Image (cartoon, rainbow, N blue to C red; front, side, top):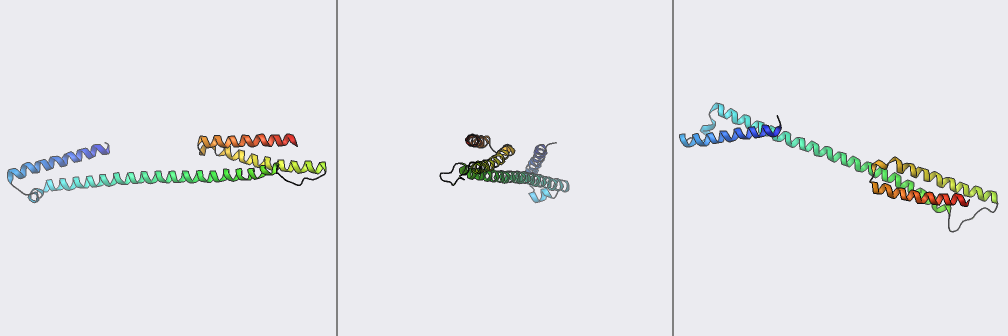
Length: 171
């Protein structure tokens, strides 16, 4: 039987008892104290009050537990998303730093052709390493953030990919 049904039954019994009191007290001209002195009726009323108190307490506690669980779940989820954004942002930051070093405004480049080639290849390898880490983090955590954020990160990755590819061709 559902809790709401039990509650309605208990409430109905209370109403019947109160109606009986009203009928008997007006007919017999007794007070409520005398009415409650009847042993069976007093026991029923105490039992009903106890049942209602237990029902309301359990109902309140159940709602409280559900609310606490929901709060804890949302808090954990938000903390996890925050950690993911920190990690992805850190990888993007380092990638951006190395991307800027690919084509700086001023730089000293070795004069020897072979040394220059090695110099640019080292830059390229470092950017490629950062790019791969960033790419992995985007895909790894894609289920944990909003689709629009994921698409923005993919756009950034594609732009970086184009620039890295152009740099590779120029080497």
